Image (cartoon, rainbow, N blue to C red; front, side, top):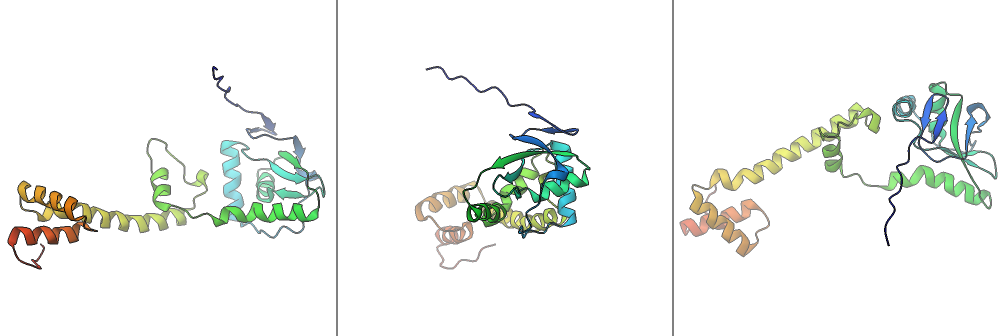
Length: 214
C-alpha cells in the first residue's frame, strides 16, 4: 500500500494582523473572553512581555482554551494578557466540553502544573540553543538572560572537568607504546575512570604499587 504524505500545514488564518498556525474553533473578540476567577497562576510582567514578543514573531501556535460549561478560560490566561499588550482585538479560541465543574477545574490545574514536573537536561538545552546551524533566539525560546547565564556558568565548569579527564592519558603518558598499553589495560580491567586506569597502567610500567601519577 502506497503511503500518501500529508500536505504541509500552512497558516490557518489570522487574528487581527497576526498569523494563526494552530487549530481553532473561532477567532474570538478579546473583550468577550472571560478569565477564570479561580485561576491561581499570577504571571509576571516580564513573562507576559516575552510571550507577546514570541506571538508577534512566530504567530499563534496555541489557541486559548475556553470551557463550554462555564464560559471561562481553562488554558491560556497568559496568552490573553499577551494579546492585550499587543493591542490585539481577536485571538484564536478552542472550545472544550466538560461533564462537570470538577472535570473543568482538574483540567485547569493540570494545564498549569504538568509542565512543572519535567526535569530539564540543561546540557542538551545549552547545546540546542548554541547550535549555530539553527540560530535560536534565546528570548523567542522563552529563555531569560539570567537563565542563559546560569546554565552557561554551570556547564562551562562541567566542560572544563570533562576536557581535563579526556586529556589526562594523552598528556601524562610518555609515548605511543605506553598509550596503547593504557588502552589495552583499560579494556581488560574496565576501571571506573581514566585516572584510576592510569594508576594501574603506571604500576604495570614501573612494577611499583602506588606509583605516582604526573
